Image (cartoon, rainbow, N blue to C red):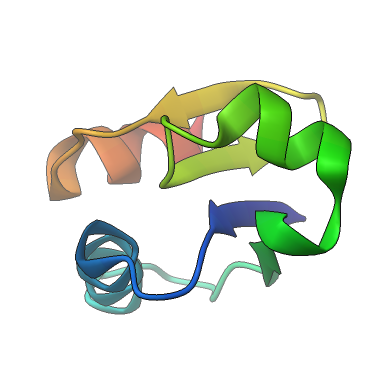
Length: 76
């Protein structure tokens, strides 16, 4: 499971989501888009960092990232 931490009106978050959808993977990833505005702790920790992609082991890929970095992160 992967979590894309986002917030509303965030052009970088939209760009990150587009990069994720454009990945050429054998199997699609299980992605959950999380609006950090719904959680005060997430907003405090990630407010200036979004978009951030997290995996189920709490590993993070912070913006800026490109498709090759995304591919490496989700296939590691």
